[in-house]
Amino acid sequence: MAKHRIYTMSFASVYPHLVKKAEKKGRTKAEVDEIIRWLTGYSQEELEKQLEKQTDFETFFAEAPQLNPARALIKGVVCGVRVEDIEEPTMREIRYLDKLIDELAKGKSMDKILRK
Image (cartoon, rainbow, N blue to C red; front, side, top):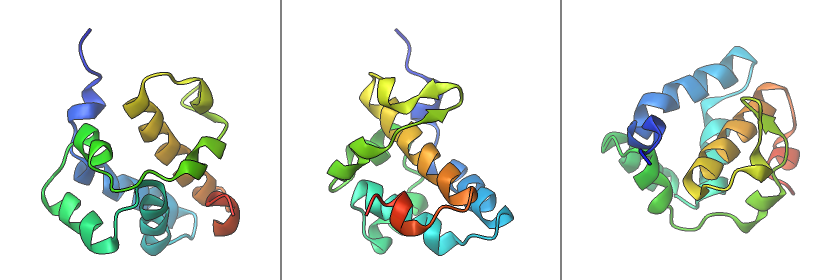
């Protein structure tokens, strides 16, 4: 079976869209970065290096220093699919990120988004 094309897209090509979605709703790039760091365990410096390297999504998540165990608490629907029902691990990580950015754009507090 062929890989989904998002796996080969660079994370850096999608990142500005995540930031724009948040900023349109009055949120900040810093909050988007905090969510990504919480989810993946990247430091801000490591995140910026991944963006500079144009790392693809599959590699971005495969090289994540420490995927947050609390990400399993992320529930809900993204693009018509329940994130908790996605079996393919990389796609599930991508959809977790989508869901967190959606929650940010909908005005949820960072404590709730980061499952504190």
